Image (cartoon, rainbow over all chains, first blue to last red; front, side, top):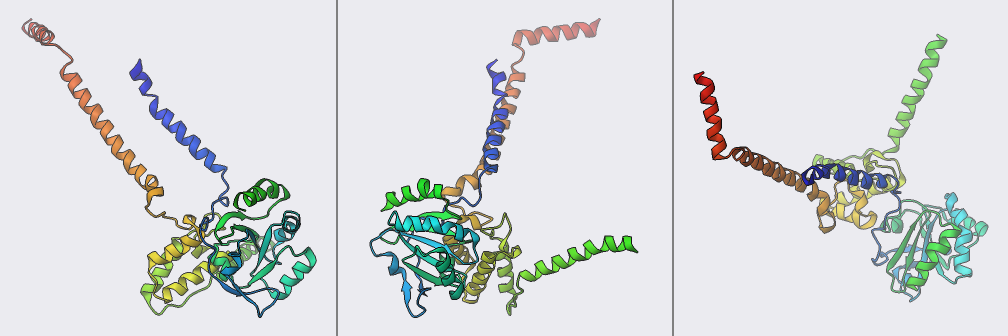
Length: 177
Length: 157
């Protein structure tokens, strides 16, 4: 009798494998951890959106304060929808935010901030995806939390909903602040 | 005639659409055929981060174009294939490699199939051996003698 039961082993193995593969079907391939997690914010040297004469670099993120970095573009509709949440984070929750104006023109970028509000302390102007490439950005919006020492601690791909501010962003902010 | 037109128009449009798509991926000139080959195999071996399972040599997504640009640039600078792969993985993660690198985290991925084949072979060998000994020991000495006696009787009658 015992030997008979052993014959069921392959079937059980098959079912376990099927279950494992089946749950893979419902995974979102965009929900993967950034390769830069727990690594230093990359080096860069770019002008700001606000002032073409002013250059900024990595030292922007080693000021001893946690920073939310948001990659945005005027051409990106999700970014517009996201602005109220970022304004809320910056003004109500006191999170320091820095923008990366990504693959955009200066004119359009400034127009965007005028129209949808400006939660950012400063905006890095990255029209040619120089910094974006170093960050592994593959679409806008994307957001990173950078801790006081300039280490990337959290990565969010895509639009941040008001619910996600509450359930994901704020807990992470508290965790790394 | 009208029938032919209704049949042909979508076909022509389809062909045109194909031409437009092909134009979205740039053609690069290489002086060195080896470098061209390396460029081709590198861009074929990396997955576009934002498309559903497309290689970057086959995708017109902006990020794929930027990755191709970077690979081209690094090749011109004389960077090795392994370093170029590492360069991309550092920025976009292991996701971009169709063939994951062999390391602590991925040894199961590479080792499991081979391990299962070995395990199967061991199991088959064990079963075959146990069957052999079982058939050899199926009859006791006494039973075998009786069997032989019965066979002999059958023959003599």
